[in-house]
Length: 78
Image 1: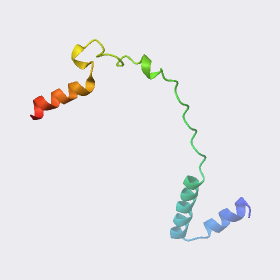
Image 2: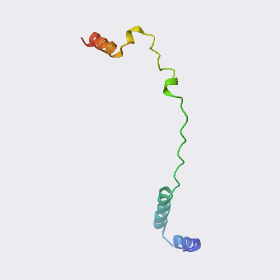
Image 3: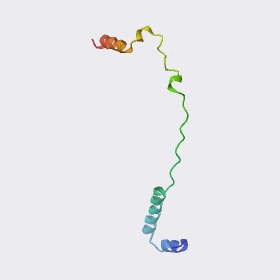
Image 4: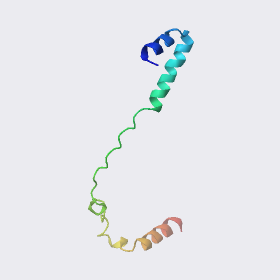
């Protein structure tokens, strides 16, 4: 079937049927659209290089983080 035959068939349809054909064409466009290109991963600095790593290393009260959490909880909940 060539384009001219399709257009003649489309033109011979009543307006409601032409709208259905147009809607179906829109549906097919969405269904068969090309896949979007996958974004390339941006190289990230190693986690160890992030500024927040080690920000509490000098705090004496946080040398044992488990103990610090237990004490904090006992103060707040006890």
